[in-house]
Image (tube, rainbow, N blue to C red; front, top):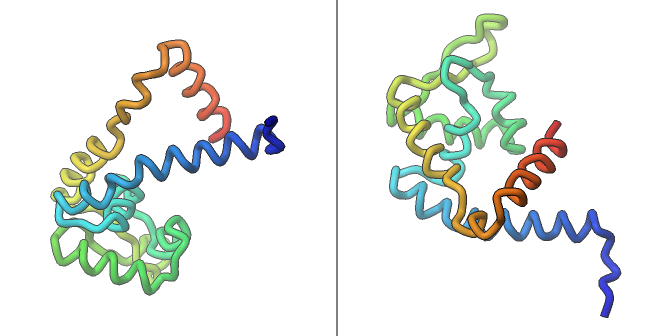
Length: 139
C-alpha cells in the first residue's frame, strides 16, 4: 500500500524518530558526570568566553526563567557556572562557565556529539549528502 504521507512529513517523522533513539542514551551519559540531561543542555548552550543572559537561556530551553534559576543554582554549587551582572544592564544576570565548567562542557560535548554507529551504515557519499542537506536546513 502506498503511503499517503507527504515526503516532508515522512522525513520529519524519521528525523524525530532518529533523534529520540539517540536521545535515550543521554540520561545515562549525564549521570556519569552527576548531571541531569537538562544540565547537559545548559552546558552545551553556554559557550566558553561568551556570557549569556539568563533570560536568553530560558528562551533557548523553552522554559520559565524560574526553572533556569534552579538549573543554574545546581551548576553554580558545583563550581561550573557563575552569575555576573550584565555589562549592558546590571539588572540582568549573565552566565559564564568557570574553568571547571569549560573542561566539563568539553568532555560532555565530546561524548554527546560522538556519532552513533548507525551513521556508519551510510556510504561516504551518503554521509556527505546528509551533512549538506542538514546544513541547508539549518541556514
